[in-house]
Length: 96
Length: 494
Image (tube, rainbow over all chains, first blue to last red; front, side, top):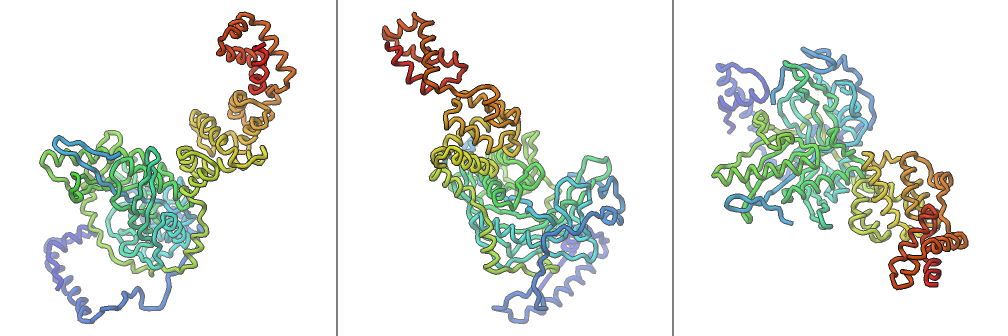
């Protein structure tokens, strides 16, 4: 049985840069446990000797040829950026 | 030679493993049609896929698959006909997707082995654990603005091969030799340009220390080292740091560190620590990569002669020694230059390549490399082409000029780019082999130096060198030394 506690929720939120209020952590842990518990019902099925499946349809990965046919659209790329300067995205300083 | 770090109480050995990130040579990116070329305007080579705009889907570039397979074959590695992509999740400003598409559980290339060349003609086999394909991230610039970090996504999505070694290296020298060899092989086959200054190749170095016979110690990962020299220095510094910690009773923490070449130290990158929880999972946007034996065979057939094979051929067929052959094959451009030089010279001189190869290699590694070095030029920037070099050497072969004069001619060639024959003609440097003319000069020299002649005839044999010198001087160095020697002795002996 999966067991996601409050601390785990806080950690995942931090890694994903999602702000979650302290009082929401406990309820979220409950919801996530419910979801995982639901998925875990699949473990009742015996999957010994069955290859993992990558797709439900019989499709192969499509390969593209090595041609440059995209890019050169700086304006579109930066259009939704909260801040852009000299063609760069300008983001809050990342301190190393 | 064993590399030992001497502590206050014990001797330690260093254990090194490397992850080399090599940019795949391709026109377009791994999953988009944006260009990969270096040096463009910021964000000008970015598709909406690379910028991770909602709803954009990746489509794999076949050339990147082919290049990874070629690289794997060149490293003698197992090629996996089935591989797949996973998402490696971490948050950083230059990673717009919030994850890197990489290969975690099923890489495209499995285990292989590389023979590295060490000092004194020694070699060592270093294991390759795997090669996988992954996306590069964008580039952050932290020093352009007081409050902001500038992000350029031109590199975002460019294909990288991550080549992971086994922890088989035991000295900074071995690690440096390994990086050098991988770089040479990839440059030979053209799957990576190996340009470390432009970031096309960089290495993460895992370093740990242990007393002899003990299990592996705790390792630290030194990130993003961008030259062979720094690989060497970073290992030296880091191994010493770890030994000092252990000897003073401390414990080495497993962590990511940064090598600062200016200060000659490594320091912790604490900010990256929690990023290590990558939460890998299969990338739902991409089906597995699958190909057949024909695809592998076609990749194999497209490979040129590899450096080790070339070196053996230079030694066995052309009679070069181990050292010279090693120098010539280290850079593909040098090896190519040498082959054109030898072929042209053999043709011009009407001799077997094996008969002229050593002379050609001596001239190339001595005269030309020396001049290039002095002028800070690479072989591809050489003002003297291989064909021109062959012309010069052919003039020595057929006796038109002496080896001594050839050095002067070469200097003019290097400066002006002119052909050897034109310079010899212009400056009247043709070697004098006409016995009559040389005889006349010898007679004059003997007549002008009666004292030395007497001493010579009195038993001072060594004075013959003096007479040769005088004759050469009188002819401006143009007399054929062979002819001079032949004619001089009988005349002196009277």
